[in-house]
Amino acid sequence: MTDSVLREYTQRCAKAEKETEKLATCLQSLSEGGLDNTENIEPVDKELLDLLNENRKLKYRIGILKKSIERQRENAGTASLGNSKNSCNVLGHLENLFTCAIKSAYPSVTNVVAQLQVSKHADYQCNDAMALAKTLKKNPREVGDSILKSVPASPLISKLELSGPGFINITLSQDFMKQQVMHDFTSALSSIELEDY
Image (cartoon, rainbow, N blue to C red; front, top):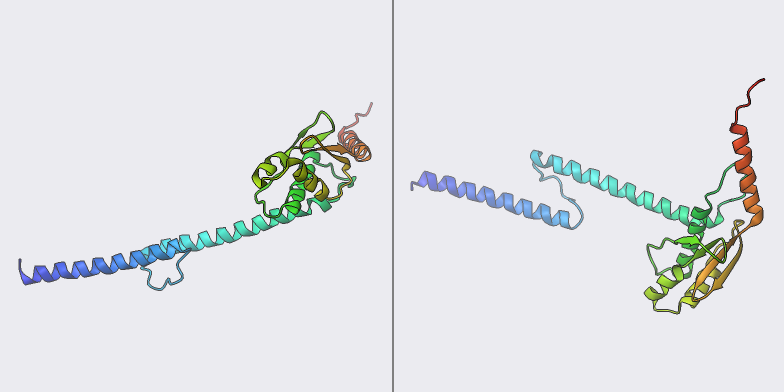
């Protein structure tokens, strides 16, 4: 092997080592959450930089959306249900109320969404105390009572009752239901086109 060939291989090896170090630094920065030092990025790597910037923007937007959803869930208990211009999603509103109640009673529990179902003993029933009691290693009836006491006031509900090992029975307000039926009825009537005879 001649000296010129050996020099060429040595230069290639040195260049490859520099590239390897640069890539290792880039990977380390990516694993830590991003690239702060972007001045040493080659023009070929600009596409990577653009993707990283777009990813940061999307993560920021996701954070804003998550906060907005959380605020809406927290405000569900205070939302006005007696609006005669709009129909109400009864089950959705009740689930929001009970999700807020669970978060209020047990702030350490995360990712909770209340699940309600039709009840034989009332209009709806919340069984979340049973599953939550297992997680918290507490008596289900005590958990149910804590949730019941944390449910925000709502014109939709006329009565809440704890029964059995921790079930919460929900009875809807008859006045509110009458308003909703009348609203739906008048909306249906106003949408009917009367023919001229």
